[in-house]
Image (tube, rainbow over all chains, first blue to last red; front, side):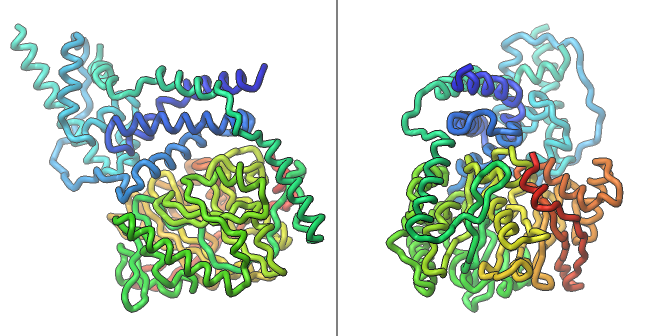
Length: 178
Length: 405
């Protein structure tokens, strides 16, 4: 197989295996979604450069390499006197440690889904981030706490409080529809 | 669907267009890049230049080759105090270090800790204050630093005709461009890492030779690194910093039976400033080892809340390693306990504990590998002064070391 083809196959494989975790890693640290997407693309473009220069045999651990690249890209992206982690909060609102209740059989029409997303978008970036990391990236609360630099209980509080709000919203809408 | 699935669906909008990005990357991958020189070609070119230099100057600049035939860098004489890492963006020098009017240096978090004596003479100037929000001001300060550096270099008859300053963001250009001209020495200044770094490509050490008064600034390289990086670690990982090479080469040059290695400080869960100083004038292994001076300020989620752990000067030499842990700790005793827990979690026995810490490093970030060292912890407690203890890790032989992988 020609080198280009080998690199391409290798890239596709690595991309498929790593894209979600790499994106979650970046998203957890980026200020917002747009930044995260930009950085994400830069990271894989960097991988492309490395592959072109050195070939796939050069890379022993693509996941570690990508994490390192992501780290550096984040640095570079926010290097202009900004702290990466600006979303630390000292707001600790009380919240009982309720067990996570999964509501079954949600009727998720496209409009409801979009509406929920829009509500989330209006929240603090950190709330959206926590939601994303929890529900999309499937991370544990403790992991999210580490990634975001927040206290675990704070992560939990923000998540649960927002979930409660969303449930209320959905409930109201259901009632209105009825 | 479940609520979890529902929210996951709602959050799909937060995902990038993976397919689109993949297409872009693949497209880029397929592009022919005429400017790109293959690694092999680069190495051959470098080898040619080196051979030429040997022929012309009569100076044997190669200090050896590893099992793969990769040329080891010359590490003959070093005469600058340098550090490779001035911190990251999170709390880099910009907001970390303060330099006061009366000449003391301290850090923002522990105002009462005077670090002045921890800083080598070369840096006892405005070095730690070189970045300013005002770009022009920053450049002016940078220029001052360079002027300072030049002054120092003049003292050792450094030939500035061969000095080139580059502004590029990444040092990889050095690999492709400068390697081909080993007579060009490159000092690279950059804001990369939110710090001011001076880069000297590993191969350019040869051109820094001036009548046996060689100078080499500690180099820092980013990805992709040259094949030389493969000298370290398991020999295959492509992301080993050239720092590793440097330490490996030094160790080999001095016939070291142990090697000081310090992590670059950039850890997963925090942006850790770790200053590494060493006496580059060391004439033998012991002198070199004795000169190592590491100032590390451990940061983690616990950093802000519970104080800091400082790996700092202790009996002339401190070989520092970071303990990757999520366990909050204050002080080294607790750090050690944290390491123990990590090791236990990883299934290591007590006897393997020190090695476990190292292995844990490797697993946490395989860019960093530690062949062997005395692992000495010191902590500067607020009230109790310095407290140190050591763990000695058996060394690999260098034959093993260079042939691993």
